Length: 155
Image 1: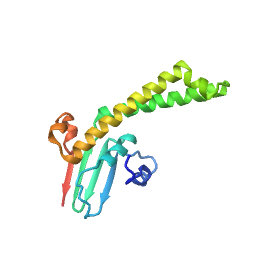
Image 2: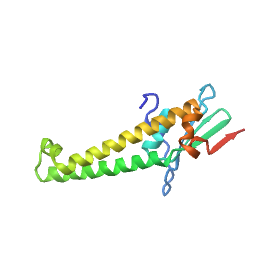
Image 3: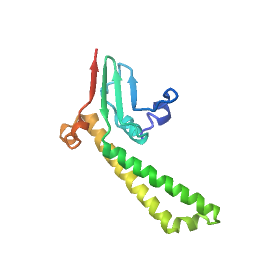
Image 4: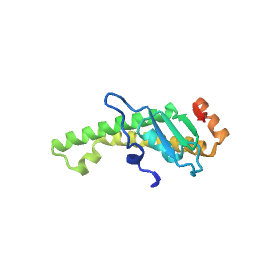
């Protein structure tokens, strides 16, 4: 991920108690040339499983939905990663060493599945985000309704 934005900085504002975040909104100074969410912002949104990413500049806000397929890859990756972590803890408690755990059949499969879905999520997110940044209509056609902003406000 670009060093320009850190996830902690982008997600610094929390929702009120009892609410869950639905999207990521980034406000930029009017001198900033980008009018749509950037690659970094879309990556942060996908990693946080936020289905909406909006960018605001000067007198315009543009919002895109992150494709459900990307969010599904991320959900599956998180599920396998959690299972792998649980297996790791269990095996450590049983006295296995890290070298033995890596070779443990169930653990290795979980890590492989998590990594596979992480790669699918990362590459799909990057493809989608770069197409949004470039406004590459040809690439965005593959994403159907996700390739169009679902909200665009100018005042």
